[in-house]
Amino acid sequence: MFHRTIIVCLIYIIFTNNIRYKYWLYLIGFAVFAQLSGMNSLLSEKVILLLPKAFSERYFGYLSIAHQNSISVIVFISGICRRILPVVLFFLYRDVLNRSVKTNHLEFILNVLFFSLFAYIILSFDFTFIISRISIYFIIFEVFFYSILLTIFVKEKKYTYVSALFILFFILAYKGIINYPELFLPYKTIFFTF
Picture (tube, rainbow, N blue to C red):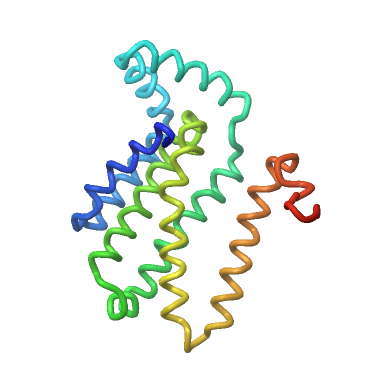
């Protein structure tokens, strides 16, 4: 059985179309403006009240927990950097990527990465519980993108890129473990414990 947040994947249908980059930049600019001005907090409360009562009760229950576990600005900025890195790498190596991978696959992955950035910015402070659940459906495309990059750079500068990606993934794993060390430390396998 799937978690209810899988419904977010319905938006992937839109991502099969070619969406111009300027529209993504407008959406991301709007998300930044809404987050800085506090407009998304006001809009979210209005929209939630229009939804069915069961949903709004669950939302306000999660919201009370979210205010206790609110993310810091450093975590927010590191999340933005994590989501913007593959987009920047795409634009840096666009020509090489277009020669080696089907363009429609790249456009789809780039659309998902842009939406991941947009969703993270707009949902981070008021909907921390939502973004933490739906991020998994978008972050997997970062892995796809990085694996495509690795296949391209097999010949030139291979060790530099592999080392940089290894360091990035180590930082991300550390960041995931440090927040909830009791879930991961000591690490137990069926044979032994670390």
